[in-house]
Image 1: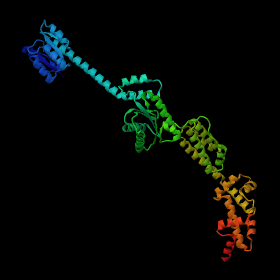
Image 2 (image 1 turned 120 degrees about the vertical axis):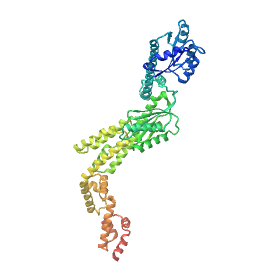
Image 3 (image 1 turned 180 degrees about the horizontal axis):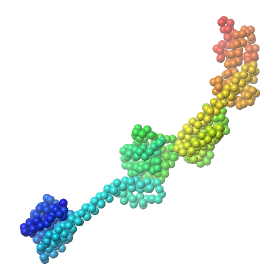
Image 4 (image 1 turned 90 degrees about the vertical axis):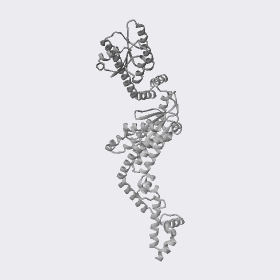
Length: 516
């Protein structure tokens, strides 16, 4: 209900208008009457009506003075002026204060009702306008953060916006940034994650970091732009990582740009992306800055040297320890040279293809699916781990296949030693070339792998064991004859080897044998 105050110095008019106007029917209520302007203004101060119906000529304070005084204190109160004929000049002055309704006495009920309805319609229209403006403001306040976020994302990631655009949108969004010094931070979550995890990093960062200009997601990254006022930024980054890991058991890699101005944000963003790409070499779960990569020059030419044929031979021979060493050297070269990432991947894929071609067709096809994994991997450590696992698997399969063959070769070696025990020329090279027609290096490693003993040690042990047996059976044998019989051309050297293995010289061992 709109409140109405009626003012007139004539009682008959007050009583008449009070009684014949159906106030409630038009959405109003009469809150009181006053006989002059002074009394009316006191009631206005105490009750603040919406509409005042007043005569112009009154004692003490006339209607025009009342309008004047009320207008400066309560400008939203609307007036309906009542006046006798010939007082139009007063009405003209009242209109300067927004009075639109001037009724000449005597006026009837319909004229007053019509005036009030117009005023009430104005009030309702103003309410609708204010409601519309408030709704729009609420919507704008709701949309503004997203619009501001989208603006900065576009400005940072695309080249279509310049400094002039930034200044324009700063005015629209009421941003008083004054082109401050900033840093850009990119977070990349490691492992499987969803939007909840990205949203969590935004919240954690906003809680820990002060002076954030922008916090948003770009593809699989979380981008934070902050005013560069953090002397201990790395401490804050570690705190964000630790908090996030505590809740989700997921690690993240963080790239931090150098300091720059807001209008340089595109350059700083590209720098942060470059830092993040070096995660391929530096590894997951790290904080990477320009300083970490400034000494590393990405190369595009071939600097890698490796023996693909030897590596594949080691795999096929089942010699995992040696193959593993070759693989480690290969990946160390890739890491140290830091070639273009795609070039590095091509080296890995080339060697992997050579390795799986050693397998049977069905098995080779099963390994071909791993090629796409290598292409999608984001760190060289991931590639090395997968390559290492598959290489070991293939090598051990070949080892099992060759196990029987290996055992038969070792048996031939032992048999050859038995037959050539008295030959001074007996050696690993002699047996490999004369008996087995194989590489001496391969034969030696195979023998040690199967027996756990080096070939030379085995020969010495067999010779001394035979010497001990001969001494025990025939006490009259001469030491130089025994040495010669077992392939030693130097009796003194024979005695040294004998003592090393038994703890006795041949003579001492003979005496010891006799006493038993």
